Image 1 (cartoon, helix red, strand yellow):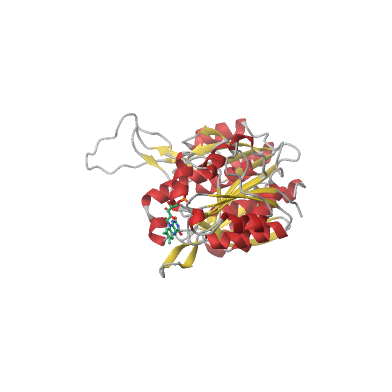
Image 2: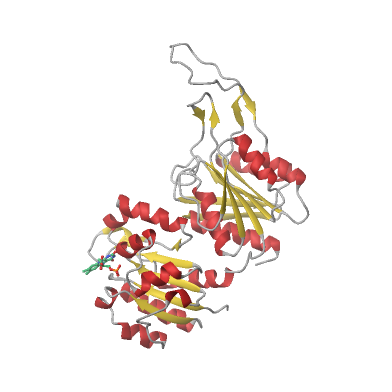
Length: 387
Ligand SMILES: Cc1cc2nc3c(=O)[nH]c(=O)nc-3n(C[C@H](O)[C@H](O)[C@H](O)COP(=O)(O)O)c2cc1C
């Protein structure tokens, strides 16, 4: 068991009582816990309760920039503190600590389902993710006010498990260069129109954030992301298949390459200059194949490099094609997701994938893309002998 120094932030919400149980579980697992309650949290549960459970006093005046800890976990995370963290406000000891802390941060939001669904909260969540904060939950269920919906804090056992994993894996990929492609390429038809796809870049961004949390040096080759790229990774814009091929192959000596971008297989052979006029005539476009980056990487692969491809395809036949791709392109792992479903994969927050490798297949149940990213990197670390 890998133990760590954990800062436990607690904010003002009914679920603050569950943070007492989390404190107990963390202490029992051997972690050194320092509770930090917001003034509002103290209206729900007394700081003394946490101090007794943690066997440690709560700092009232912290010098946040001097804090040494392995992990900051905020549970529950209120809508209010979530917004403050997204914007970088520092008006109490917890928000000051969060702003000054440069280690991994795990947050368990808990709020009314309508607060969670609000556009402001959605935007703040995306920002927080882009800062590298890992979110656990919220879950669907009954809330304290008797409403049913998304907003319940994850159970303390689940949060404990994520803390354990973060502490244990914080240096797992240190010293490794990880190259990730993300998003969907756009192939010009003329100066304003393009052929594109629905990829949001969420999966690649989640992989980049997770690799960063594990200490890797991360480069993200980004094709038209509709989510912010995580902080702390080197971002290389590559809007077209040609640019993506060039930028990726130029960095093809990375220790690990994860090809999560949806790269066009074909592009218009002869894009028009200027804007093609609307004259009522039909418009015939000839498509030509683009570079198969994954195949190129497989051919050029340097010793020991780990190569992961992604296959978005349909049903059992699609999975069969993913197995063939593994061999044909000489890659170590193919992450297959079934695009026949619209609740997972493209432009969705969740995914459900099959990890296909030479030694077998592993089905990962439907989960947030962060969890899927963590499972993919677990498989990568295992193959690198770093697990
Ligand atoms: C009874 C009660 C329950 C509340 N529960 C929540 C909650 O679950 N989630 C939340 O975001 N805000 C909740 N609030 C509102 C927060 O307490 C309020 O936004 C507060 O300013 C949060 O401060 P903090 O983020 O600094 O801890 C609740 C308020 C009350 C009075």
